[in-house]
Every structure is written in structure tokens, then in C-alpha cells.
Amino acid sequence: MTVPSTFQRVWQAAQRGWAFLRKGPAYVGAFAGWQARRWARRRRLLPRPWQAGPAALWTQLDARRAELAPAVQAARRGETAAAQGALHAYFRQRPAPRFFFTWADRPALQALIPPAAQAAT
Image (cartoon, rainbow, N blue to C red; front, side, top):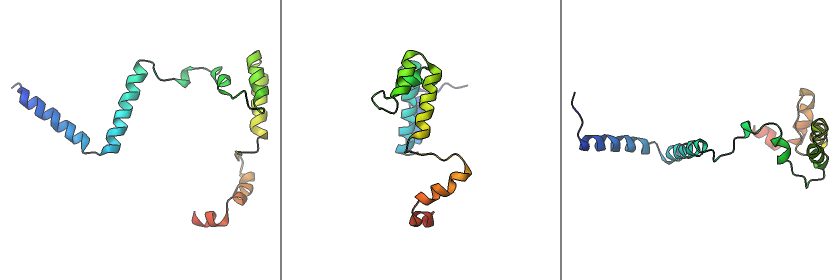
């Protein structure tokens, strides 16, 4: 078994680098972003929402909005069930955005789309 010389090792590393760069700037940027996120996660610099727990939801709500104020106040008092009920009522009663959950609501959704947009799809 022969040991590669310093020149051969440098040449091989350069070839690997050029093969990586030949994939294009989008690939290189995505890979560099992935490397940066991995580096930051190891040092716990990025937030980890899946580890925050359910109590973190209440801190993210905007207390300045009048519609969300009952939910935020109930959460601050420690009444989780009341806060959940108030948040559920807000999602049910808000005018926009409205999400359709059943097939019965499909005609109402289609009525909101202009005929030109329906014909284009």
C-alpha cells in the first residue's frame, strides 16, 4: 500500500471541491445553510420549538389584539382550559382567514374564486 504524497492529497481535495461547486450555486448555498444550521444547533444557538412544551404557545400570542386578549389573560392566570376555549372561539369566529374543513363547505370556497382563475387551473 502506497501512501499518497502531499500533492496527491491536495489534488484529490481540489477535485472533490470542484465536483461540489459544479452542482451550482443553489446547491452550494443550500449545503452551506445546512452546515450553518447544524453548527448553530450543536451550540444551542437556534430555538427548538419542539422542546419548548405546550406552555410556550401562550407566550407567542399577541396580547395587544382585542380578539386574543381573553385567551392571553386566562393563560396568564394559569387557567389553561379557559385559555384553550377562548383561543378556539377566536379561531371559529374570525372572519379571515377562513379555513374549510368539510366537503359541505367546498361550494362556498369555489364561489370565492373568480371564474377566470378557475378556468386557468
